[in-house]
Structure formats: structure tokens, C-alpha cells
Image 1: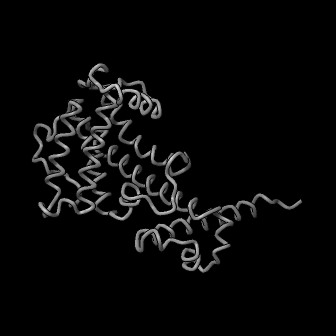
Image 2: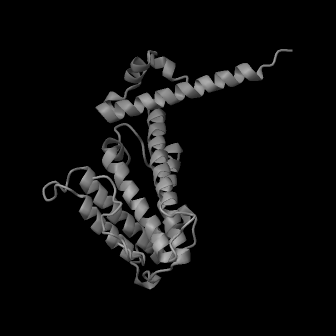
Image 3: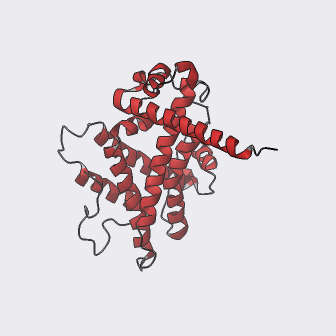
Length: 262
């Protein structure tokens, strides 16, 4: 009896490779020409296929684009995790635990900026205006899961910091009653038992970090600054102070040492 495992595996590999090529082609068209250019007909033409042929791999344009969004989120998350891991030499870690956490925190922020300023179109796809024709609310599919994976790169770091070096946060009675239940839902969504005040600090830090990057990537600081890198270092310093860290840390050559690409 012939062994069907080999041919089946080859077919699976070929199908996976074709799906990956379709995804990469769609991403290139999105980045180079914008969302309107990434039609199934245009993607198929780039690949030498027919548009109906794409339906063998994706059920719709929306499904394909959401896989593209998911891929970009995963790529960004992986870059930030690698930066965090590289921030501390396991053979010679800083003697001070606070400095170790500071190095990880700063590395995550700087890598996010490096990726953002070198992938401005992708940043816009993830964090700018929604892609036309792409649903975002309540889908909870691969794109939403990958977005949560990206969020977790910062949230896990935040939890590590909270466990090792707790810092002051607003007490629950001090939080607006309209905000408290929303923070509790957010905390449950991420699956962590931290005070509502800590969730508030995390979100506030995210707003400051994302706001600084969006202003820079979308050119909204050009009226004042030719080089936004030093301003981002100020932002990191402010973020660090909110979570009980210090940046630059003692003995550091300067605030911009090791900063992300301008």
C-alpha cells in the first residue's frame, strides 16, 4: 500500500507557502500603495493567479487583510520581546534589581519607537485609521488575538515590575466610579489580578507612549522639532517615573545612550 503521508505533507507545505506568499503580497500592496490597492484582483495579478483562485486560501478579502494585520502585530511583538531579552546580560546582570527592570522597560520603549519610525506605513495600519472595509469591533479573531499578544509584551513586563518593585498607584476610592468597572473588565481580559489603580497606571503609560510615537510617526511634531529622538527620551523618563523607575540610571553616559533610531 503506498505511503500517502509524504505527498500529503508536501501538499500541505505547498499550500502553507502559497498562503504566506499571498499574505506577503497583500502586505506589500498595503504598505506601498495603500488599502484601496490591496484588492483580491490586484493581489492575484501580482502572483500570476486568478482572483477566484485566492478563495481556495482565504474566504474573503477581509479575512486575508486580518491575517496581514495579525502578522504585523506578531512581528512587532517579537521585536520587542527580543529587545527586552537582550537588555540584560544573563552572565553579568546589573546588581541592582531596579536598574535591571529599568533596562528592560527602556529597551521595550526604544524598540517600539525604532520599529515605528522604520515601519511608518505598518504603524499606520495597526494604530492609525482603520483599513476601509475591515471590521474591528467584536471579531475576536486572529488579528484581535495578535493585538493582545502585542499588548502582553508590555503587560507582562509591567506585571514583572509590579511583582518585584511595587510602586504607588491610586486607591480604588480615588478612581472615577465610571472608570473603575472599565478597568476591572480590562484587567480580567488580560487575566491578571492587579489593583484597579495599577491597571490605570498601565493604561496611562500606554497612552503617553503611543501618543508620543503617533505624534512623531504621523509628522505632528515637525512644526517644532527636526529630531524627535531627544523628546522621546524625555517621554521615557516620564514613563519610568510613573512606575517607580529612574531613567537615565546612575552611571549612564547620557539619556540618549542606546536610543532608538532617529
